[in-house]
Length: 175
Image 1 (cartoon, rainbow, N blue to C red):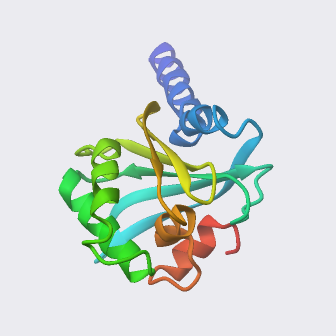
Image 2 (tube, rainbow, N blue to C red; image 1 turned 120 degrees about the horizontal axis):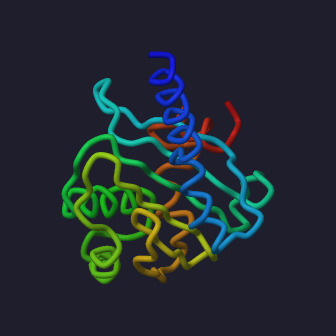
């Protein structure tokens, strides 16, 4: 029995060492070598966790003027079309344009975002004001180029004026 408890404890430590945060760091560091965690927060809808978000930046200091990465680990399944529709709607509300004007961006996002299941991770790395690279479960998936993409897209989660201001503050390491 003692041997079994020791084996289970070792197994638990092994899984704790391979946490989502440490897994994300490898894909983030492939683009931002000195990236460190800035903050983390769950996104909940009607009290149900939809995903857990983590923000990474060089030296752990977030700035809109420098590259950063946002990783979402889904707690529930979501269809590609739902993710993209919500993204386009949120970006439109942030002044990126109408749904019709964002149609070419929708095409780019279709290459980035698959259907997701519980435990799947999408990481977006903002490499410039207009560019981002996306990873799905650690594998490079696509690159997006769109005017002011950093603010319009990543602002969905990181803008202090959004509907999820408390979550945004926690991600930015301010709460």
